[in-house]
Image (cartoon, rainbow, N blue to C red):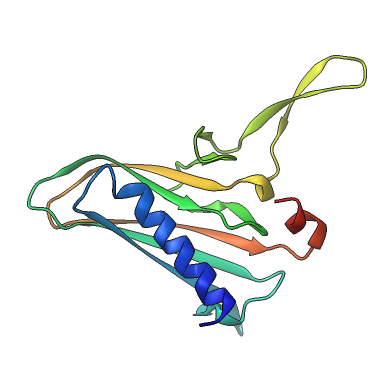
Length: 164
């Protein structure tokens, strides 16, 4: 198995583990596709040959395998290190993000930065620092499913990848 395939499997397992404790019958299946242009048409191809600068679309399908409705389902998707979340690509659009997997807020994330003169200003957190995305899916009907997706760009700057 290639290192990239192994990485994608770890991401999929992470997505499943984040939802499994809350709803034993809800499963998550993640896929990754590289976006390519054929003429003027966007197509999805295997992500196994992705390189810096390429855009990958991650999709996760959450399935309720139970005969009862699953309530308050939260879909969580990891953002791999070395990748930058592309914010206008989240589906559904109402997405939250986290830098640590514990604290989530609406996109775009903001933080206070102390200036040289001692004052603080609020600045947008770079999308390359996001580590998780989360959507509130609400109720998941018995034997039903809902999907989330987001696109991410593979960063080409080694120094950005090294600090993650």
